[in-house]
Length: 126
Image (tube, rainbow, N blue to C red; front, side):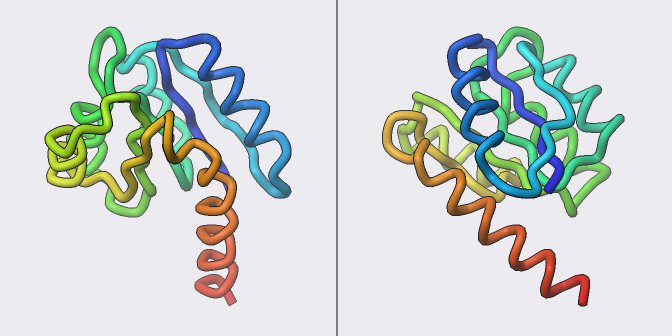
């Protein structure tokens, strides 16, 4: 599974990269600290999954999701944020996010989701 991650926190990027490195058959194609670069990376690499922070310099995660969905409906998009209020979740889902995870409550669920997505992809490609 090919993944792009974007977060303005170096610590969060390091945690995500470490977590993803422990999952078989996962390749991190790009790591970005702002939304503008993240959107460019998504267009360049066309990954299977993008994990996006909501609050970043340049474009925020919801803005990126809106832009990606104008052209691409196959990339799975996850908004990963400390701002887990329902208003943010609603904005993300209306923009076209596939998943909304709280950094404080759902972070450890990411590997399980990736494993599920890999299984779906294997079944689809048989």
